[in-house]
Image (cartoon, rainbow, N blue to C red; front, side):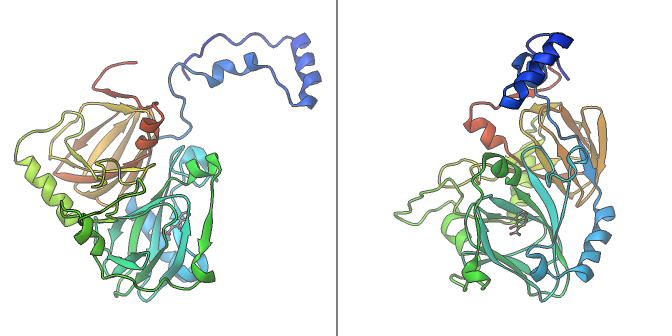
Amino acid sequence: MSRGLHDKPETTPERQAFYDKIGPQSVAPLWEVLSSIVTRTPSVRAVPHVWKYDEVRPHLMETADLITAEEAERRVLVLENPALRGETRISDALFSGFQLIMPGETAGTHRHSPCALRFIVEGEGAYTAINGEKAPMKVGDLILTPSMVWHDHGNVGDEPVVWLDGLDLPLVRYLGPMFADLYNGGELYPETRTAFDNISRFGTNMLPIGAQFDTENSPVFHYKYEDTKAALLNMHKSGEIDSVHGIKMQYVNPANGGPVMPTIGCYMQMLPGSIRTERYTSTASWIYSVVEGTGRTTIGDTVVEWGPRDVFVVPGWYPHHHEASEDAFVFSFTERPVHEKLGLYRELRGNVTQ
Ligand code: 1HN
């Protein structure tokens, strides 16, 4: 841990006796803790880690025999940061987990104040319905369920479907404003619009005349991988490659050009084969989910090897750089928009030291 504002004063017996005396009144000396709290640079609790899909998948498939999606409400295996076991989080501010839905199952309609994204990892034939509008899932698609929108999932296909959930749950728990309801005590929200309506209205570089927006959530809640990948591949043809990010695009809210939800930003990047990026260090944490390709990422002193469907976490202020062994497409999400809104965001590019 980096040194703080001052050297912690010695805890003499006389001082300890004083602290013991004042403790019962719920008061404590700041100078005993100041150096460990106000550090020169971030002291993040989460550690770098990779979850290999081939190792997690058998456990996930076993859950299908253990509990139904209905009984579980959401059949999710949480990706718990090894340094934060039991805290239901992948990084200090974010939640992530793999969710499984089997053919014929539904996961009922509910809503909650934490916002969520799903990034589709395996299978076809499932959907998420948002306020009664279905978003049919394909591998690599991004589907958003912003704060307090009604959502349910179903699988009308004939194979298991798995996606990665990402939520700002730890952040909302910390701040306090947690709210959640079941739709009509457990009913399914009725179908309101045809599938892909949100994309037609808001996701084709056009907006309905008179459109007005009263939230920071993107009115597009489904971003198809075929479109995302086509954009990155075409950009690659220009030959312009960012030394830190390769070719990296942010999914945006077409109403304001900002992140797709107020607390979570989502990105897709192409790392052309044999690239070695320069180091990137940011105050925010990043959760990466590999769609295609193989490579490795060095996060501080930790090296993680990755391939399709693997997930890894880069906690805040860890320098990291990527090496791709073949053309790779990697999705990521981050609480960076929160840092930016609070005026706390910082980043370093390359081998600068702080
Ligand atoms: C949730 O509602 C979903 O709707 C997924 O699919 C994961 C994790 C924590 C709290 C609520 C979903 C969740 C969740």
